[in-house]
Image (tube, rainbow, N blue to C red; front, side):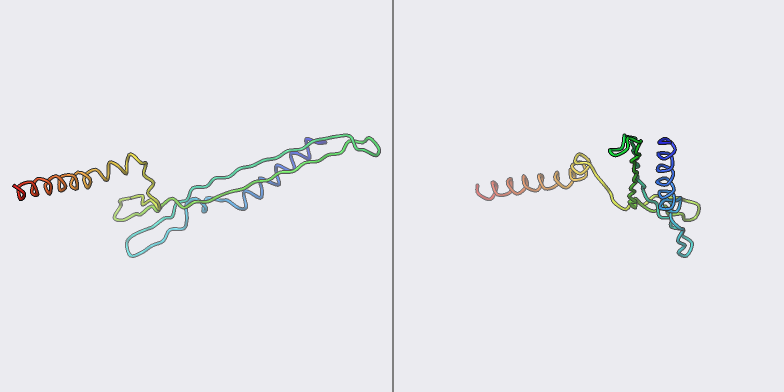
Length: 129
């Protein structure tokens, strides 16, 4: 009997998840602008938990069932698929870079600043002489 009740709890919870989430949650409706198709893409994460127990009742010693279940979901937009002239490109919503990648991106600018600093030092030494 307890197994049947646990099964019912799980089925109810899963049905609720199905009503919250479908394929349109991940791949959105296509937006057409001139000759460009834009398709929103999202990341879906969800969790599910269920539990139950049978135990003896206090008054008459009969078995008592207690159980519950729950679920949660998050949807995060990650980008857009852009289709134009048969080419497909993914445009991310956020560009997450690691610290190393940021440092490498900054390297040319930093090199120019260091060179400029040394040029200034060399020119001031010449003027002072």
